[in-house]
Length: 78
Image 1: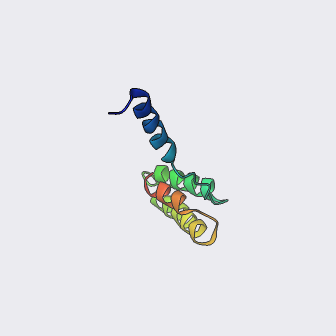
Image 2: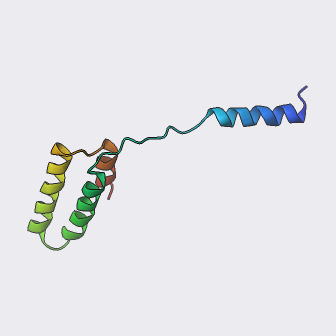
Image 3: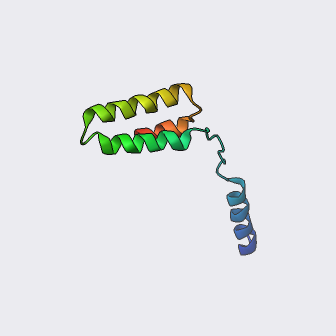
């Protein structure tokens, strides 16, 4: 039979072993891409032509710029 203190220390060791992976995989243009996608979201309700121009800018930035996959995913969910 285990002692209560041993049981608690085992739980603490298990929690210490599981740490989320820190991700610093941010691109230089991530903020700009997300801002363009937010601007597109607001513009698509009004002026469709302006919204399409903004969307083309965002796609061009994602293709040619330094945009991480996380930022592209975030832009899709905006």
